[in-house]
Length: 217
Image 1 (cartoon, helix red, strand yellow):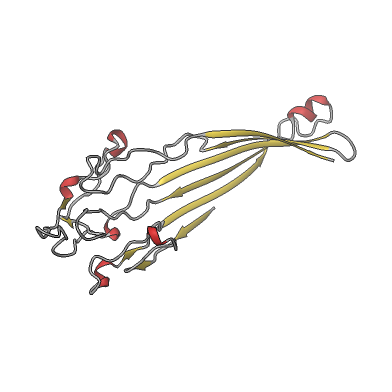
Image 2 (cartoon, rainbow, N blue to C red):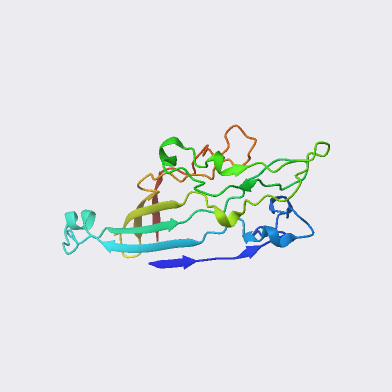
């Protein structure tokens, strides 16, 4: 079992990714510190654990039944993590504009039932200039104030190796990823002018599985 903690910050770029199209520019070039916030994609807390258990049933039997049903091994990986920082976007004549944060709770308590994660009333659009439509000043919303949904996942596998001869072994293995089929929620829509603002519109991978055979000789 391991526990991870990470915290980093940035202003002008602030991203793990070097891709030019994915960074967050500052709202005010002359005062970049106003956008000092966690890095994009930062996961503040993460807990990971692994376990291996050899099933004792029939493991000591040397007959056909013991060779088939005995000696199976179960292993699992558990992963829990907090959500990523969220930046609320206010489309305007200037790129990377953000609204003002009014204070109070930004996340609905029942979002798992409704899939509506963000409370729109927690934000106010910053005034814009009539001609350029650029925001008149930087918004106060900051990624340090808000995180997206956390995730939890358990992967399980069971396997056994069979001796088929002096130099030949057959390994049978079955694996289930996200074995409990917990929803891996994506981040909500953060564009203030989008009709789906605040709503989670999809999930990541659901439960999947695979069976594998490996012959060694």
